[in-house]
Image 1: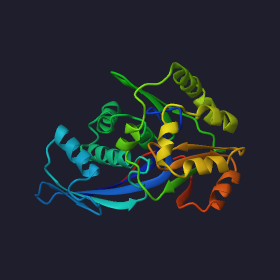
Image 2: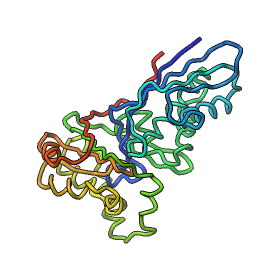
Image 3: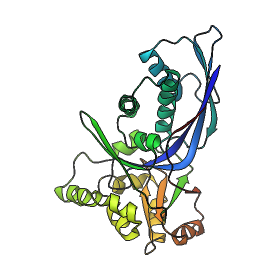
Image 4: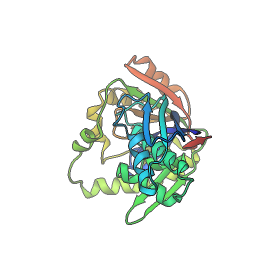
Length: 288
């Protein structure tokens, strides 16, 4: 018998102007245990999941095993810790995909090289903005063309990250449907000029520059209509050293700051939110 525990972080995608190609890993985790038994059985069992028989961890694990080998062992997949809420914009599906594919690769004696491993994981999600930071950790930007290109950026330790999680869900499909089919040249230039300085802003912990580089015109003006607290919070923190963005497709919001002034103002609003003070995560960890 062999057993591993896979720990995968939450991720906050987009950060305003990095729509569909920037993501940040944060230290809130799901943990999955996978056991391989040599008991003569060839099957996969799962425990602790709400959707037993139809969960993404199992699907990615089973698909990957069968693609590169045959299912010839008895695998037990157990959800040990579930701290990334579903349909809240914190990369729960990326966490499941990375857990399943990386878990399978471990039991395949790591025969899949890293480039191919990443391609497999991205193929399930369709875009890499959550997958790459979940796997590598940190702040990652990417271009997906015939080949996937990516870069991990430095994030200054002085920056503080607060996630503000409403009690309701926003499905990615709903958040995409609300976006316009076309944009003005002015809005495209506005976004593209800002995202070029994102790396410098996060490396230098320059809040004023962060406010500029995460100021988006492509998705947030439309998606914030699905998040009833967004405008209230944005108004309350105006003038502080902090920036509010939608995390992924929402409804979670990401507050970036260097002090407690903005988050204390938010707490005084008494909104129905779960609030967590998080740090940058180093990505997926497999413990034997």
